[in-house]
Image 1 (cartoon, rainbow, N blue to C red):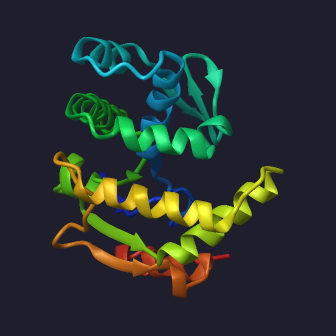
Image 2 (cartoon, one colour; image 1 turned 90 degrees about the vertical axis):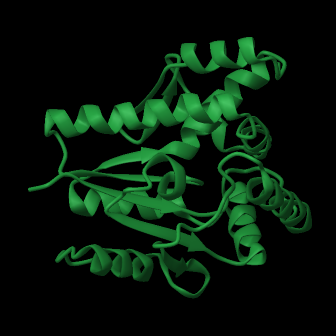
Length: 227
């Protein structure tokens, strides 16, 4: 069976991670959370005082070690699974993603990871989710999806997630911050957030999680019962 690559892009807070992880599990594919990779760099960047020189950014990208293991994200031997999902790290990730050097470093890492898995035959394919997987990292992906929802729906989901973790969360503040990040992602000079011309657009605001998964499976020809 040919190794397949599925790209899932979309704005922050739209549920890409959940969708991609479930799809990968159903298909027996590797799941790669490119957003978590940016967040890991942002986590380290913040600890270093957010330097912006090319030398220090390149050093940051080259020296950061990221591992996905048992649904955990390990950065330089630290379990950062929960910490990188905070609003602070989300903001830092949006800022650091503006640097072309950082995007190029992670692009190479993502391509190398998928190629390594392809050669090892340990998975039937790979599902990658992020902001520019289908437009920049893997423009030749076998399937491309762009998942979206209104800012209000995404802000409400984010608020509920934060409250479930015991964090204080204000809907209006989250909405303002989310719109700001959308603007930054869509208007950056390098790899702006956009749907690939051949991407399938999926509005997650009008579908349940199970319906979204079922739709994606039908698009890729997955004859698997959705639980």
